[in-house]
Image (tube, rainbow, N blue to C red; front, top):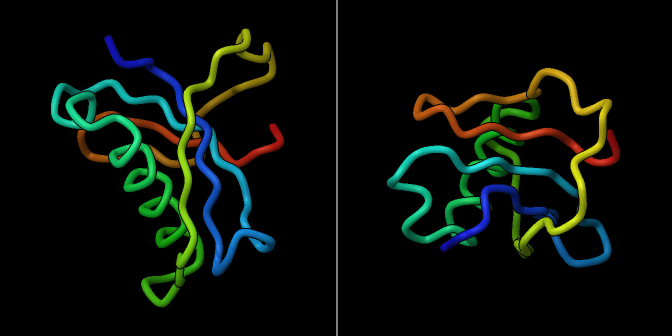
Amino acid sequence: MPALFYTVALGINETSAKGWLVQLVCKQHKRFPKESACEVAESAVRQYFGTEAITGYRKASEYTVALPSNLGTAHFTAQCGCRAWPLPF
């Protein structure tokens, strides 16, 4: 069973990558979780930085530690309900 939370690193390259925490809640995104987590994070980046935002590097991994208590409201919510927060919180 795929994890519900993923960390995603996005950037022009690996050294410029910034982190996102992504929660996958819809069935469609849970089918291909790592790819979908990257897509949700990229959508969040485009919402805040415009459609010209370039992400040449993307890497997702399961988030396996306890969620922080200060997570708060998501900074981005996709139409399907999946959510993203920039790291660090």
